[in-house]
Image (cartoon, rainbow, N blue to C red; front, side, top):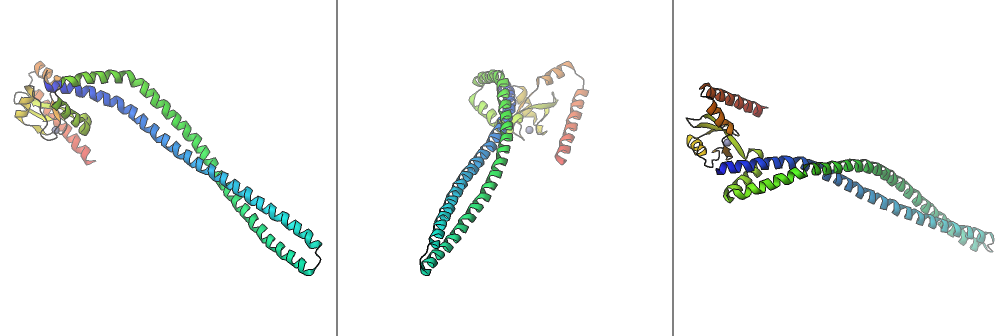
Length: 274
Ligand SMILES: [Zn+2]
């Protein structure tokens, strides 16, 4: 078995693995995103709850202060009634006026805090509603992730074992080359060469559409590892190419493939324009 064939087997298993994982990855990403949003809401909720608690304590304090002032004022009023001299009376009156100001200030503080507490509670209700909604979405996301994970578990284990086995057979240098290419090019790490004329060793890379030199096609046909000189992907020859060639000696085949290639090129150009 040529190293190209070994790499191709590995590449195909790896492609299935990546495809399988990508479905789970999407579900995983969605779950992470939803959990993050839920976490933010938890924080907002906790902040608002602390705010409400703090405001309620302030209100209780100010109300206590207002009640204390009120009690002192009623004592003063009684004392004023039994004042013996005008000077005594005026002293009580002056203190009473100061107390009235203090009472007004305390009442205003209570009102202000009450407005704030109402606002905070309104926000809290909103957040709680949003939190419930988001909890449902996050719950569904988790169920979906778990289902996908369970669904692919066996196949994933199977392919992982298969990949491991194929990996051990490939020389380390070529293995690293393929793995680097998969990282940078994904599904285009290895692509088939389009053989236009097998006898003339004429072919092109089906990823970048550039012509591959005759020597490279010959090398590939003799089982050597060949990269596309333009895009650096590893080239291979589809088994179908051999069978097609064996089955038919029709010279129009090469022409047909050439035509197909041209159509593909036009398609690519068209795609590049839009
Ligand atoms: Zn190429």
